[in-house]
Image (cartoon, rainbow, N blue to C red; front, side, top):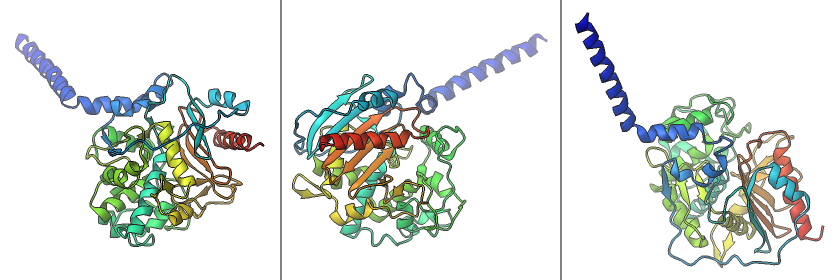
Length: 390
C-alpha cells in the first residue's frame, strides 16, 4: 500500500512538473489566448484597442525617413449639439475633423491621447485596397478578372477556387464564413484563436471548403476575403504586405507615428483588421482619398482606382449598404461620399463635395445594435453640414 501511494505521489509530482513545463513553453501563446478572450471586456476594451502590440505578435510598417507631412490647423469648428451625446453613447475615443485639408476639430476621450496608435479593425481593408490599385497600375497584378489561384495557387481546391480578384474585392466570393463577433464559435473568433496560438492564416484560409453561391453573384461581408487578397499580393510580388504598404503608401504620406500590423505565427500581417495608426494619420489617409489619391504633391494611389474602388459595384441587395473594393458607400450617398468602416466604431468618412474628412475611433460594445451604424453616419453628415453653413 505504501509503495502504491509512493508511486501515486510521484505521478502527481510529474503531472505538476509537466504542466508547469508546458505552461512555460507555451506561456506566450497562452497569454495571447487569454488576451483574445478578454479583448472586448468592458473594463479593458479601451486600453486594449490602444495597446494591441502588448498582447499580440506585431510587425512595424516603417514610416520612412521623410518629414512629417503638414496637417495645418483651421478655425475651430462648432460641432452640432448632438455630437456630445453621441460621443458618450457610442464610446468614442477620438474624433478628428478636417475641412479643406485643415484640422477644425480634434478631441480624445475615455483616457486616450493623440499619440495612441488605435486598432483599425476593418478600416485596414481600405488600406490594402489602395495597395492593390497601385500594384495593378504598376503591372504586378495583370487584371482584376484574374482568378485568385493565379497568384495564390495554394487556394486550388479551396472554396476560393473559381473566384476572381474582383469577386473577392467586392466581398462576393460566395464563401461560407461566419462573421458573428458575439459568437465564440464563429469563424471570425476561431480565426482569432488561430492567431493567438501562433497558427497560420494562410492554412486557415486554404482549409475553407464551403460556398453558398457562385462567385460574383451574391454579396456577403466575409473578412477572410481580405486575407485572400493578401495572398494574391504576396504571390504577385513575393514581398510582405508591411514592406509594400510602407514603400507605396505609408512612407510617401509622411505620417506622424510608425504604424504596425498584428501578425499570425508566421509573421504574416493580419490585413483584414490588424493595422494600428494614430487618429491624425487615419485622417491623412482620408484626405489623400478626398484628393483623388494625391498627397503632398505626389499621386500615391491612381485617381482612376480611387474612383473605381469607392463606387458601389458589389452585388448588394436593395436594402443593403453599397460596397466597392473594400470601401463602403452609405445609403443616399452624394457623389464622392464614402467611408472605411471597422467594428466597434472605427471610421474614416469622406465627403469630397463638402471638403470634409472625419476620422473617429471608438470602443462601442453596442456597435451591432439596430441603428448604430446609421446614427454614426447621421452624425458625420450633421458635422459636415454644420461646417458648410447647414
